[in-house]
Amino acid sequence: MSVRLLDTTPRWLRLTLGCSLGVLVVIGIGFFFGQLAQFDITPFTLLLHLALALAVSSWILNLRIRISPDRKPLLAIGVAVVAGSIWSSVQQWIGYFQTGVVSDIMLVAGATLMDIAGGCVIYTLFHLNILKK
Image (tube, rainbow, N blue to C red; front, side, top):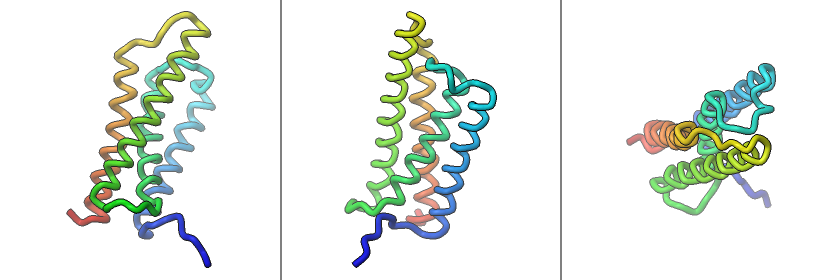
């Protein structure tokens, strides 16, 4: 008896793996240019928030979950925003403890907007490709 964890189509799995590859490329660029060593929110972090929101929400949509197909994308957006908000909070606290300075509130709001944008892009692609609406 096998248990399938993923409930997906080949097209959607390609899109998910492409998003995951994009995250790895962005992380590689950040590692190469030394952007990952900073614990505050920077413009590079905004790009990383967008890429991770795309990947996280697309992987959530691949999971076999007992929820209606119309509500599954909303769950994916919610998970992406919650994970991004927790990550932003941790970045804020680590940056504050290291330097005594908090990040600019506009960058923090931008990180949340990037999380929402990534989730909404995946929401739209899911509706166009899977639900055909």
